[in-house]
Amino acid sequence: MPPQGQFSAESGSQGADFPGYEQPGSDALARRQPGPGSHPRQPGSPVRQPQARLVAPGGRHRRAMPASLSEDAPALVLAVPSVGGDGLTGATADIATVLRVDNPALDVRTARIDHGGRGDPSGIRAVLADAAARRPAGAPSAVVVPQVVTPHPASFRELREAIAASGANAHIGEVYNTNALLAEALHHRLADAGLARADRVRMFSITTSADGIILATVGGEEAVGTASVTAFLLAARLALPVMAASLDAKPTIEAAAAQLEGMGVNRIALAPCVIGPEADPAAVEEAATAIGAKCCAPLGAHGNVIKLFSLAYGRVLSQLETPDT
Image (cartoon, rainbow, N blue to C red; front, side, top):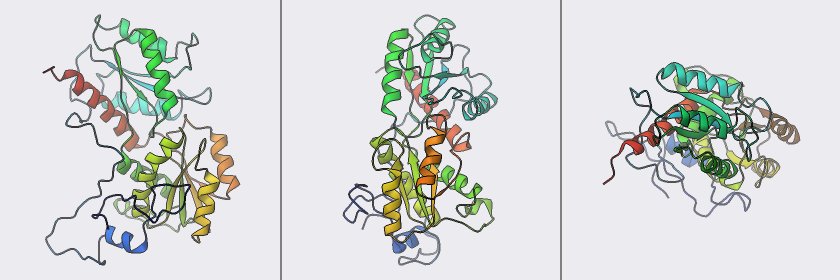
């Protein structure tokens, strides 16, 4: 039995399609909730918080946005792996607006990951070139953060190629490995859609219409692996079975639905574990229809998502400011 609040990938997996994932049982969930359980907490003893992570965080270089920025601080570029023509509007524009309001000195830009470069002024290569032209020669010109919350290998490969081609002194930041924040945000989206009870912070309850959740990801099997940890934490929050599956790889949404049905789950909800532009809305809708599930909105400009971008920028900036030893 693993220590309370830690993820276990031991035997007892729900199936071969979901390696390393074990759905928490009722006893395990009881131990993760306040109140009586098989191991009641003694009065005055500290409450241990879950700290499940897929990989180790970035060492001591992890902080939020700096309180002040110099005029030549690198730009924060939100790089969108859009599957449609409107990827820089909607959630992307909302996230950029909040970041600008919260950090008036920060140069926030949005760019489309342009799949090899097509003369588009909103493409990543053009945006990087402009950011470099507005800063001292050789100085860090941009921190590029892919607008995804799970690994997306194609986007990172294209960004590395774009940075090399542009010649800009740009650095890539990452926002995943943040499962607790994502679990909370997904909980809110499900509650907003009436598919899960609201969390205790919001202090209200609703009648739910789901007794099992599937987290829908894009980016391949690696994205599912990361989202599986988020699924574990969300299951603990909701006291419901939660599984991660992929819109573009295996395990599929249909396979996850079949597995939940085999566990006796009759009402399934689909929760897109995406910000929005990186997933085809039609594909999400088709996946939900195929399994007869209701679906909540994508993460969008949720406060936790915006916090992830701030943390990613601050971590890269602190690494750049650390003197060489």
